[in-house]
Image (cartoon, rainbow, N blue to C red; front, side):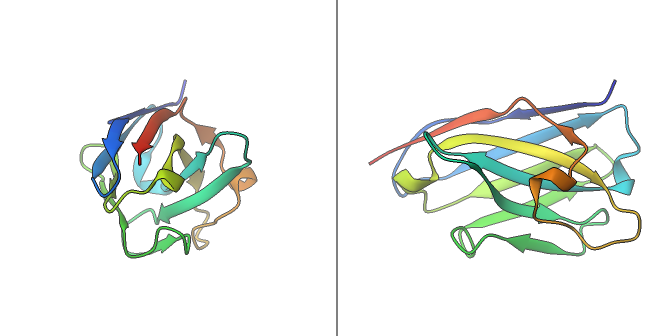
Amino acid sequence: QVQLVESGGGLVQAGGSLRLSCTVSRLTFSRYHIGWFRRAPGKEREFVGVISWNGGTTYYADSVKGRFTISRDNAENMVYLQMNSLTQWDTGVYYCAADLHYGLAPKQRDYDYEYWGQGTQVTVAS
């Protein structure tokens, strides 16, 4: 079955950086947009950013714009989330998710995504 596995989470000081990875297997990777979402303690899951199937388009939540960057390597079935200038408000479980593009633009709503990883914890110490 399809697998998405996040890695790279951990504890970091405010102002620091982390790079999360999402390894995808058992699907035609280049046909999928890949999104990142997060769930902060006591809050709903929220959109962080998304990269289109070919890497040509990215969208970010306003809260992370200018600090986070998503990239992908279609040869390796990998997606990366580079997070810089982290704050305590970035603490949460981060998930990657896959959305078959159907020729449409990348989406920001979690219910549009067909496959999800289990998440990786990011904790930013203030």
